Image (cartoon, rainbow, N blue to C red):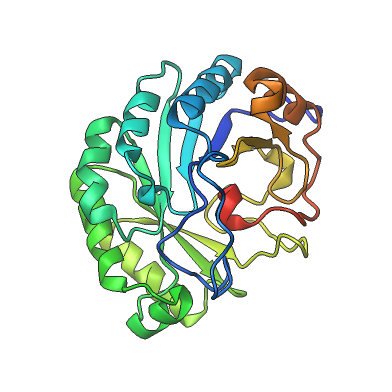
Amino acid sequence: MYDQFNRKINYLRVSVTDRCNLRCVYCMPAEGIKLLSHSDILSYDEIIGIVKVAVKMGVDKVRITGGEPLVRKNVVYLIEKLAGISGIRDLGMTTNGVLLDKFSRPLKEAGLHRVNVSLDTLDERRYHEITRIGQISDVLRGIDAAIKSGLIPVKINCVIKNSPLERDAREVAEFAKKYGLEVRFIRQMSLSGGSFSQVIGGDGGNCSNCNRLRLTANGMIQPCLFNDIKYNVRELGAEKAILEALKNKPECGSENHQGRFYNIGG
């Protein structure tokens, strides 16, 4: 399917929860957030139904996000059901890696293809500073487990301030090279300030060839991360919500004053 600017839209990012087991400084305030009620969050059956519709319309790439998707109960069941949908050629997940040691093998067996793991530093003190509560050893074990389970290519998402030449970024790049991982550098963004740029080593942030729609945990189809446009699948139905998002996908991102990274999925 194509939008009004003749961009082929074949990628759906699905946020399954707004909850997270970290409190990264660039994602949420120290005091935490007001969480969605469980009744507002899409059930797995609803997500599966929406993805089936999206695939029939031309989506062939699906990525599961959060919050942190691995904190949602029975997420392996969701992966198994999505993996069974004919037409999906790329089924991935973005995770902070904290629980990946436990979930890598079950996820692979359920049909997940690969993972992107967030890792902004290799310094234990800095990692705890950035995440407020995290232990880097958990993530490193998770990455190792993902490699051994065959969730490859394992990609590293590294948030930077300005440049991949920053000390933390250089060390992450060296780590990735040593273990045969791919690394993507993402400049720190601001939704409300409209501050974003193209991902270094990836396709994100390049509006001219954007190929994605987003499904939020509470059932909104959003055509652009940096825009307030959204369509409620529970009110409109999946097909109409997707068509509206497709029709009104902006040529370029601007600002988003309603959403947050933890509930849209980044």
